Each structure stands twice: as structure tokens, then as C-alpha cells.
Length: 247
Image (cartoon, rainbow, N blue to C red; front, side, top):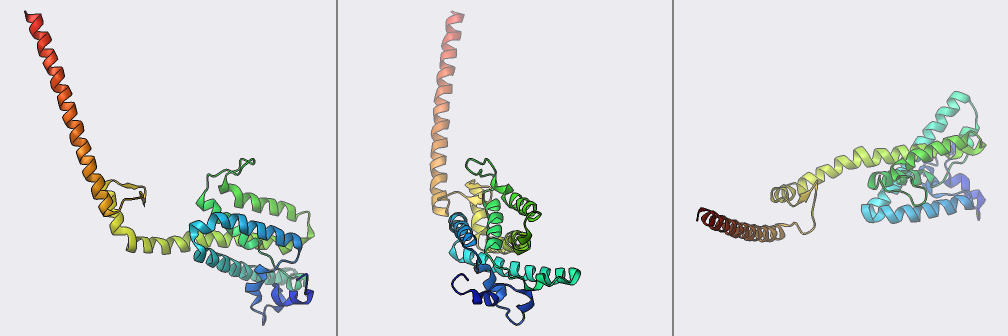
């Protein structure tokens, strides 16, 4: 946009021009209109992506970015049309909206779900409060900045879409695959006592579990034998003491 300013109407989300320029619903999230926005979005992607991508996997990570960006743009478009219908202010139709901050808001929801009790260094704030604090801070600033319409709705819908995507949709799909692919093996592991909650311990495959069970059985037999010897020794000492007392 800085190099070719005339490209902004074709890639940013301008509600009055979204039809027929429907690709704006996809491209708007990847267009930053300022250097500051580019720096913030890049740093946010690097730091939060470093935490989430190893957990989700690269494919799911990219899918999350694409879906959240698209759904957020759709919601922002509908909101702008609705605001114009209520206020009749044309700036809601022709204001160029773009930026990656909707996806970054969705990332915060992902971090909240992955490590809710993790505290940020120095700030002493748990990760589960990050989305709420971000929204409260953005809403508070919107009362003092006239440009709030360009980012506030994107942050709100990015957070909400991230919550919807990660909770109902992913949970339903993941639980179904989990039951079909891991249900039998997990039930077998649970019977051996090598599961912790719903996640099996490392090395708890059937062969390893059998080996550990045999090892535990041997250890139990040795312990029982040792306790029997100790008990027999104590009994012998008591008999000797009783005999001495009788004499």
C-alpha cells in the first residue's frame, strides 16, 4: 500500500465495493495501511505463532489464519452495512478496513486455551485474561480516538470467531476422530493404569505396558517376600523373648 497507494481499494475491505470485489473479504486481513501496523502484526505473528504452531501443526495453523481472517471480514462487512442502515453515514460504506489484528485476537484466544495459567513475565498476568484485557483496553481507547471504527470491530469479531472456531467446531471434530482412532488403545491403557487423565503416558504402547506390568509384578513379589522374611524374623524374636521370660 505504501508503494502503490492506488491498490488499497482493490485489496482492503470497502463495504460499498465488496460487491463485486468479493476477494476483499480474504485480502483485507493481509493488508496493513501503516508501517506501525505492519511491525505489530509481524511481531505478533512471530511470537504467538512460535507458541501455537508447534502445538497445532503447520497445516492447522495456516487453516486457522485463513478461516478466522475470512469470517472476521464477513462479520465486519455485515456490521458496516448495518451501521450505515441505522445511521445513514456513508463513511461506514467507504472507509477502507484492513489489518491482521483480527487474526492476532484469535491467537490470544488460542493461547488462553493452550496455557491458561501461564503468567506473562514481569506483568504477572495469566494468559487466560489476555483476550478480555485486550478487548477492554481497545474499547476504552475507542472513546478517545476517532479511528476506532477501523480496528475495534475487527478485534471483537476476531476474538469471537477464534472462540467459536476453537471450542465447538474443533472439539466436535477432534472428539470424533479421537474416539475412532484412539478409543480402543486408550481403554486398554486405562485398564493397565498407565494413563493420566485422557492422555496416555509416554511409552504406554501394548508391548511397553506388558513389560512394565511384568516388572511391577516381580517387584511386588520381591517386596512381599521381603516383608514375609521380616515378619518371620520378628515372630522368631518374640518367641525367644517369651521363652526367656517364661524361664
